[in-house]
Image (tube, rainbow, N blue to C red; front, side, top):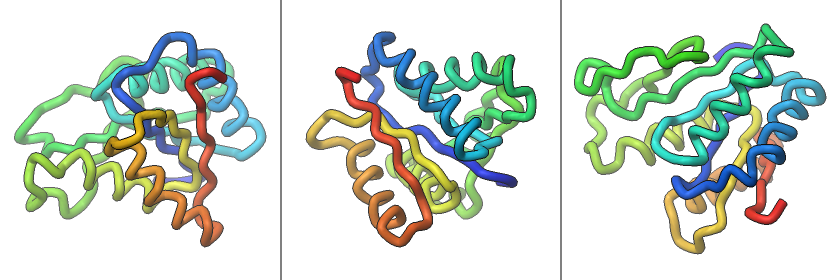
Length: 153
C-alpha cells in the first residue's frame, strides 16, 4: 500500500441515504488528507456504497486507486477485478486462517496498515463495531484517523 490509504468498514445494511455523506468523506480524504488509495470489501451494502463513492470521485481525481480486499485466497474463491477497481489485495498469512474468521482477520490486517478509516457502525454488537473499537487503539497512538458516519448524518 503506497501513499496515504483509507479503508472502509460498515454494516451490510446501509441505506442509499448515507451516500452523499459518504461521498463527501471520500472527497475530504482525497483533498484534505492526501489519500490516494481506498480499500473496500464487497460483502454488503456499505461496501457497495463506499466503492461507488470512490468510483465517482476517481472521475475528478484520476490518481486515486480503488483496491478490493479479498478475505479468501484467490485460488479458493476466484474474484475477477471488478469494474472501477484498480486491483485486489489478499493479506499475507491468511492461508492458515479458518474460513469463519477470514473476513475479520483480513479487515484487521488492513486496519493495521492504513492511515484512515471511514466507518459506518450503529449495531450495538457486530464485527464492524468490534473492528472500530480495535481501530480506536491505533487512533489513540496517533497512527490512524477514524471518520464515523452516523445513520442520520
